[in-house]
Amino acid sequence: MQRVVSVLDSCENFLVNQRLVVALFRYLDDIGVYNIPPGDLSVAFVNEAVMASLHGRFLDDPVPTDVITFDGDSQMNFAGEIIVCPDYGYDRCNEFGTTLDSEIMLYLVHGYLHLAGLDDVNDRDLAEMREAEAKCMAHLNSGMNLAKSPCLIKYIGS
Image (cartoon, rainbow, N blue to C red):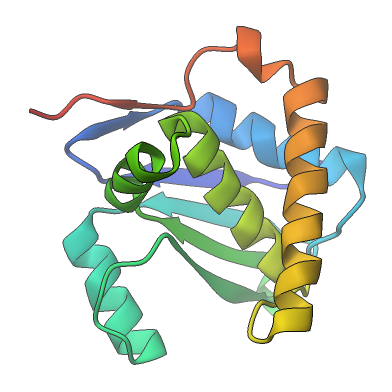
């Protein structure tokens, strides 16, 4: 049975393709390289102010960040929550020479991998995370044929 993936887009400057976000997580579930806990998954796209508030409240760092992941509760059939800041990604894709879609996809994969038990707190863990991210991104780019898909996220701000 496929998990329910709920997507909240509360960003005024971005339009999220919720159907494609759900498909991305279903594909990650189907490839089975990294497994997150069973249960529903919540994905929220928030602006910089909300992300900074969450980052400060839960991680004691009041600046915006790319993605925050909260573990779920198996008793409640909840796999977890991934919160992404498209504003952060928009700034970084220009800095790194990537596309907004690829940057946001990386944040979604990163959050998924945290739920699968990977971490990035020390150099060894970070190297393992980067390898897993590359593997997942390659699977997504080849298997979902994202080059021919509609945009995952689109900047619509001023």
